[in-house]
Length: 428
Picture: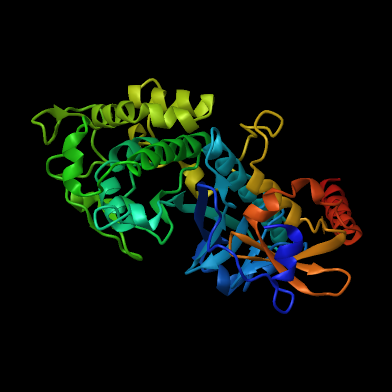
């Protein structure tokens, strides 16, 4: 569809023929944080009311009570926690590193805004890591699904495969479970927040590689597991997820607490009659899916996954307790620019998001369009400058027009300059 025909098909200035989600296979990360005010746990909505009371500069509205940050991510309050989410990032080599970088850049931005809030209000605020959600799109065409290839059955299948390796990469000794939730067009794997950016990115790399390979299997029925040569725990029983639909491998799903045992002790009976350690089980599963994992992995994460599975790098499960950095996210654990943009450029979807959120105008067929908001993660709302008409363009349409964005508008430039000037004055 051409730009001209797209605009002609608009009704009341808004383009209605748009897909429900981004067209490319994509990933995304979400992280939830509990808030501790002056040493006391509180609900962020009770203290701040809205993220707009934390972030000093104006933010672009996303949907509901969520807002976009300059990083491209989103911030909102969700049932007593602050949640940060990355934009969708297309699946290709390095996609997990891009998602992790986006999330940790948002964490750094939020922490700096909270620092300024502390100074204004004379209170202390700590972010305590609560959970991380690893999202992988499921775009299998409906005619290829059928009763044996539903997203619900895929979630149950993954619940039998990913928990033990994810435990070694992302869990700690106070963890209670690894969850898998089926969503309409994606799979969401839930775990504790990991206060180490490199480990979080390695975990996502593993999850994306495994999930994308399992999606190619001809059947998602549980008996399909017998056709694949990797170990499965004999006495494992997944349980219903505590929030939304899905399943979780929690402590009570195992014969004993897997988060507290020695990961190197061979004490876990498998379905094929072996007795293995958690590290051996995780390592064999990883080796089975290694070609798929390495097809999307950055070199750093690839090495880290191998090191944790082999024991060359310790798992957080091998520490005496959960590290204190969990309770001071953004201070005791920070983003150290593991993947600078010059070495790993932004994904195309990220570039669209950042252009839109920064207020850069888009030129189409001789007209200028000003971004005014987002519709979910897959569409940008624009106002056509010459007649103030409203238009909604999908990310996939905008990918073809990355070169058509103008410079940042003067209002946005002044706002950014003012913010930088204020930060510089505070550091004096």
